Image (tube, rainbow, N blue to C red; front, top):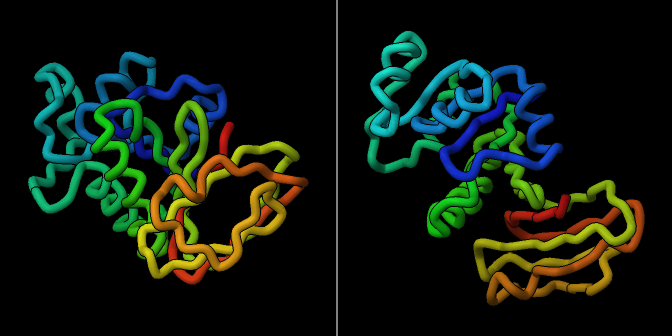
Length: 203
């Protein structure tokens, strides 16, 4: 069972995302995300962040599980990941990290590589797909027609695809668009990469 970190973006609605939320070992809320979790009828295990977005009634109700972190060099999502790592919870699912401001979305997605580099097994699940960071050559179980994209954060990273409809061979993804809108040809697909990358798989 994974620990779910619920960010304060769009609350998950897809059945896959909701199942992950309901079956979580615990739910750690990023600051004001607790409002949405409580409205959904669930209780948080912990609330982490600078705590500037929590109404007074919930601040009083959950006073014993508030974990304030005023560090302005990190966002509430990273504070929540660090909170989990300090307690040995390294299998994480992030929900609610998209659907708000687009700059927040891009920042949150890019942070997945940082978390993976720290030894965390992490997925970011949205209502349309799953973002997974990879640090090296990786193979995924799949189905024919699954929609797949890959993004790199460095122009030094070379990407080779395996068993995808539109092949890449030692490609440099100059813009994020070049690795998008691919498609699985069978019950698996893979990537050979020379650096970290982020894979998107559609639900």
